[in-house]
Length: 281
Image (cartoon, rainbow, N blue to C red; front, side, top):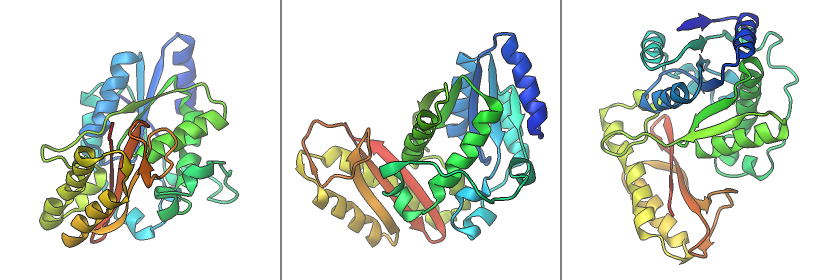
């Protein structure tokens, strides 16, 4: 595995590899890697001649400075995992390299409805920061295929919207959420949970499985309320539990029993905010 820290050097290398007809797969990360990330690397390496990953904790997508400061950093372990699982190129830029002029006058991305609900509502500005860094990374790597994880369901939709509106010729491959044996969705932020919080965290996936089992056509608000009450009784602060259309993320109060839907959750375990989702039908 070759490690690059400079944009110009990476771009030149990839340009030469593309001239040789190599297909490029790309899985961007913020580090603190787990099996969910690695599944994306393996998917890419089986389908592309060259697999690129990046580790960059992007400050512009954190609307909570404390969350950014406490984001887990495990660089040595990350490098070892990537190398062992088929990653060919690792890009590890500094903030200065990615934002040489600071954070002034960023592009504004028209995300429409996606920016007004759920993560867009509770984390204002977050998706603009995501688009800013992903657009920059895509322009550097210029992959044929982009690999991202379903755990960040709304973010997947935002990135698809970004690629569509910027007319980039890139295929998006969404990998299934990888879970711990007890059902908790793998997340870098899980590293910040203490033992008590970690035991409680499994309740998030439990309520999603509950919704999946109990969902019926008609009025569905009561099902969401039961899920919220269950988590609240466990001392878990709920930002939202929502059931939405799987293709547009329109939040529903009633369901026709046919439209593909997804349940989404965002909660706090003390300072640590976790999200999860589950396709219901």
